[in-house]
Image (cartoon, rainbow over all chains, first blue to last red; front, side, top):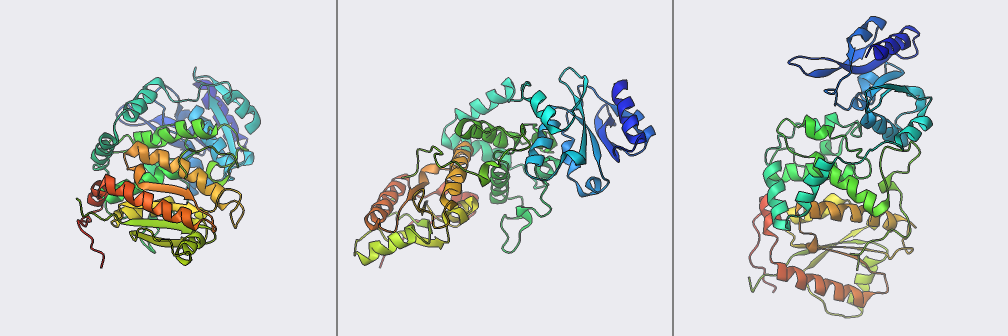
Length: 267
Length: 150
């Protein structure tokens, strides 16, 4: 991606951005995030099919945030993350320069959020067929089977909170899980502590998850936790017609309502 | 199991359901004594995690109730709560938590009879389901086999 390197170098030279967040070659054939601060750093930038990590998470980290205007190599999930956090008043057009990457691997740039929203509206942003199958498989289970499944999966959780650290939407400086007056969620990685943590995480991402799957990839013990929030993605679309991360002016799902929200369980 | 008495925790709003439950009492309507009522300022204040905390602490069933739509003392608290309940209930079902054990309702301050009927119905439904052993075990709490009412 010489075009990407060139563009990044240009932005850094002209001091239009303070940093470019992108992918670089890592160890053992893996890629890693790189923060290009000087024009020559842009030589490290790469982009190929291995570059899956949702880099948008770094936009909100304190250490990066205070550098100033941030340029970012942005695949579709990154763009959607940006729009989502912008809709939550955490980011403005002035804070970020998007170096978009199309699904074909071409560089695409936008003059602000509106054109990006417009371009995204023509892209496929839904769950993949494989992801839908996984959800359907779980949906087809009985209550007891689901309970056994999640109890078994979550029993491996070591409460490292990598899922939280990897998620661009989990930007709260003080998380609910650190509330200790009273201790809201048990600290220990016991059955209850893990269950409550993952329920809480899924609820806090309802209507906000942009189905990048980074939490699942970040999990060191391979719990498919992304399915918990993916399920929410499907549900809020069905119940409220809401898809996160497509509109920087979107109202937050759970801090808004419609008088005619339709449910069938309140007596 | 025949002598199982379900423990029900009711999370209710101050302005409608709590007053409604009060009316049940002042109207001298008898209803099941299995319910422990916790009063909140508004259904909007009832955090979803509180319902799970009730189960973790030994409840077999939960009632969540507040003002009817358009009757909220704070205008919109119950509308916000309703959205949250919709999302939460789906999540419970996905993770295999028994959503049949949570009764959601609107009970106004004038509906003392409805409150009695709601509690009685919930107690009977949860009685049929038995103790919520799955969740109590998760929380490491022993399910009480027998509760005697003096």
